Length: 272
Image (cartoon, rainbow, N blue to C red):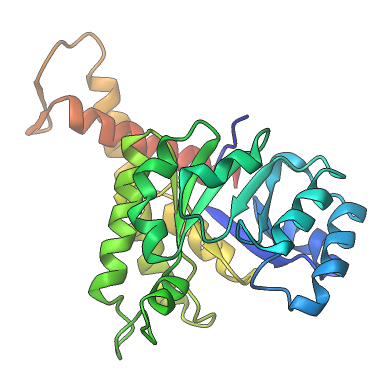
């Protein structure tokens, strides 16, 4: 199974079926959340809603509770009553956990210290199609209290985790998904982080509110100037072999890949 990751993935609580269709209308893909967004007492109702109210399975991911919890097995039983086959495993910490998700395409969510350290093994697993990282659970697992400093920048440990997950995903040629931006009204900060995610190589960025979706999509969309440069470089490469000069710039294989990635991002943003 393959999932074409769009720029924005919108979380939606699975116990709010009244929001399912709205979320699908506002975002190119939706993550129905059975974990943190749902209170323990409401999880059975969330599973019922998951099975009763269907979205497009090709645009829907289901986040299940951590492996080893009673909720995890109940989540799997609910999933078997649906057509959803793209699953995000909360607090993934070892490749051995993935055996329970045979038959699903898995996004391993690395949001604990153990999960970040296990990112290379998780990414290498055949069932895994992507890695995502999570800042708040990670810092909590370390005994900390905030992933960001007083001016809103990620602390060094969060930056390290973000980079580690991106590198692990890339080494196994899997997609990487950037963490959510929790301050809903900080659209400027969200845009800056999404632009950095796109330029760094994250396939997507997750979000928690519909108004964040267009900000992320716009951030992933290359500027007209960048797109024109990329198209010019790719066009100039036709018939060329090895390194060549174009508009005063040396063009080699890495630069060609940069240009191709810009064009791919433009296509992805257009589809979103």
